[in-house]
Image 1 (tube, rainbow, N blue to C red):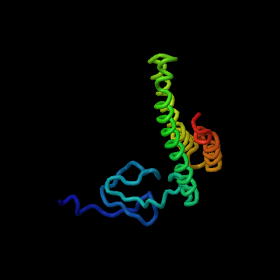
Image 2: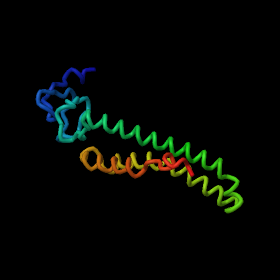
Image 3: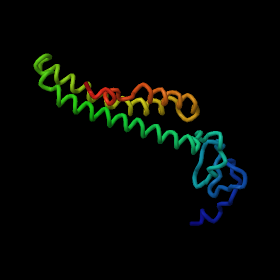
Amino acid sequence: MGKQADRAARESRLASGWTVEGEDHQAPLSGNENAVDGAIADPQSNDAARPQQFSAAMLVVLGILGGIYLLYSMVWLSWAKAYTDAKHLEWAASMGSLGDVLQTVLFFLAAFAPVLWFVTALVSHGRGRTRRLLLWLVLGVLLLVPLPMFSGGN
């Protein structure tokens, strides 16, 4: 307990106006550290190290596009189920049981293409390139339209 009494407050190198309570360390503090041995850094002081965030309008647009992609996946899943139920016996007779299973698996995997496109676009284009991200997401909305919905599944 006696050791705590002789600890003096000293000026921090993390941000002006903040003090560090504790032992004096010989190692200099870098600007990237937020807390070292009781030091508390101001989270607003290091703006360059913080990742860029989407604007509120961009978040709304991402929500709308994400909903469209989710709707596309649901339509593709319902179409895959209906089509495999209707054509199951026909495929088994013409392609054999292995061909029937592979055809069914491909139909159901195709239903996840819209979700995969959305996630891949978000991960690959990051937060700094919003125009490119929007371009790829709108392109995906156009390319992944569930066409069987318009043709009646025939």
